[in-house]
Amino acid sequence: MQVVDLTEEHRDLFAVCLEDWSDEAKEAGPRRACWVDRFLDKGLRAKLAVDDDGQVAGMIQYLPIEESWVDGEGLYMILCIWVHGHKQGRGNRQGRGMGRALLEAAEADARALGAKGMAAWGLALPVWMKASWFRKHGYKKADRQGVATLLWKPFASDARAPNWFDKRSELPEPEPGKVNVTVFSAGWCMAANLGAERTRSAAGEFGDRVAYREIDTSDRSAVARWGRTDDIFIDDKQVRTGPPPSHEKIRSLVSRRVRKL
Image (cartoon, rainbow, N blue to C red; front, side):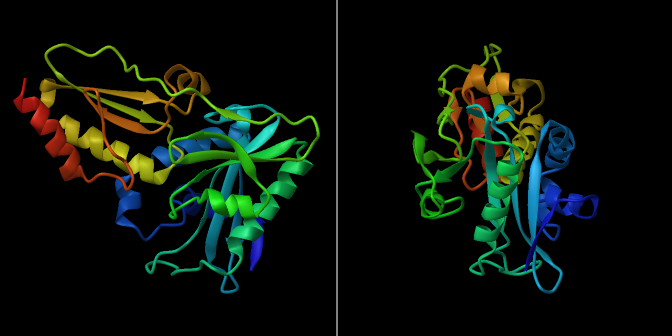
């Protein structure tokens, strides 16, 4: 197994999070590819794990924390680390040390770039991006929001711990007489993009009875303004997005509100 830099050869594969076989990747649309195009110019870095058979089976992406949804400075922020675990496509490649190798390569790269430390986020739930996995690799808690923990590993004595932006309860001003559907979309996460695309499509089926608004939270100032990155609201009710809701579920939720107009 080798860890290599992202090049043009694998850019399309990276843009679909190694799931080029997936119908859901197609359904999520070009949001992530557009985000990659923009953020490569803003310092986005990526490493890929290539298995002995030449298959790209793992990836890590990270960028200057000043370009992320986290409040901090002088650090690099890990957006996600992913080793292919599906039966489809290239098959399950987890449990072979790829994640550790990717993390070590990213940390070495960040140090070489002059970073004062590395930050990451993790979940308390035993699913994807587990906080406990990062703790095993020397990361410590910096902040917490619900089941999400912000972790970091300082490289320098004067490094400052990062923080989450405060989550706000307010939403954009609603349009009276309509169901208001609001999507906060950062663009970097394919699963979140899938939910956003399904919501946009479902809301569009109700014509002018629904006011659809989408807020681009890839812009750091928008995250500071709203305290959110990838969320979906139907009127003032937040929709659960893990795993991404189906088109049918979103349509049903909107339909219930429309019938009450």
